[in-house]
Image 1: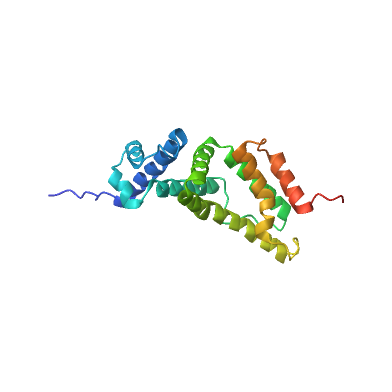
Image 2 (image 1 turned 45 degrees about the vertical axis):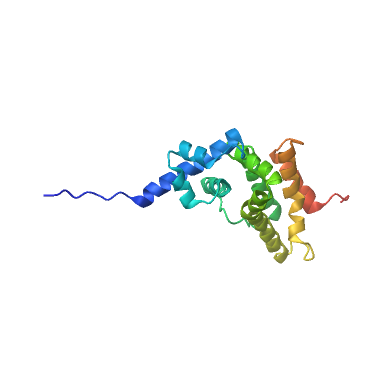
Length: 205
């Protein structure tokens, strides 16, 4: 009499392989940089055949960007944040300080910093990768800031004529520049001050 045997769970096996590929891609780009990261190298490190990768992604850029987005989303979930929204407690300054402090933690986390710097640097010389990096990672994040500022406008906390897309740059862009070019320390005090300057201006009160 034949014994009942469970069929292999292809979905679970695929998810394990996908996660191994994400981890391998992020590790390799951090260690070797984007130019030296290859599909073959990712496959070998993940313990899968390179055809498995090509079946799911057309290029290493697709692998890396998807892995990076997945890492960011998992980090947000682990921290108890909603990945696709900024907090809206009714206190704009407090909400922005909280988000920027979380961003400081992320930027100082080696697991995030190394692949992020590698992708950002390569995006400067590889226009296609740069466009994809902006469209798939940066633009959605900037839109969250714009949405939160529009909510503040509706609540009367921001002047109605203010362009949210310009306003968000007052605190996002200085942080990005300081991080990318190492022009100063990345601290909570720094981002709190950015929020204060952006919301209250520099004129005497």
